[in-house]
Image (tube, rainbow, N blue to C red; front, top):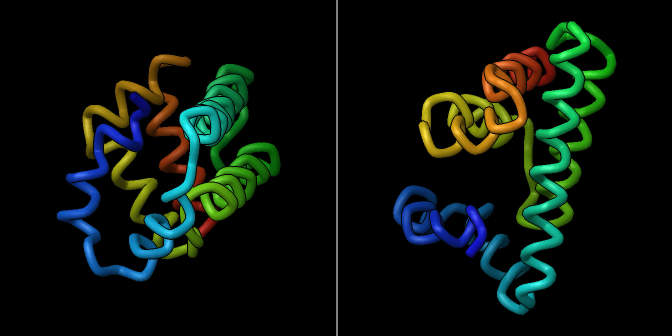
Length: 125
């Protein structure tokens, strides 16, 4: 059971009739368990790269971190829904505001969620 599926109902309540949500339903409706795993693992691999970046003492505004934000945005667009800068900005806030996301992202290194959020904020501004 992937993180995405766990929050599906909640996401539906929160984003129900948004274009992104409708696109997400379309794009993922025929996903196999393997495809879900591939999409979710790919997402988590990007968070692991953010953690490595943070461990090296790289700043959230650095080219490395900014390239990872672009990679994250592309991954979400390719696998879930079109991730606009506006949606990306909201996700960044959610990664730190929502304890479950924060905990999941921080398993790579304490403070990773915060680092991702800062990198996203720098990226969209």
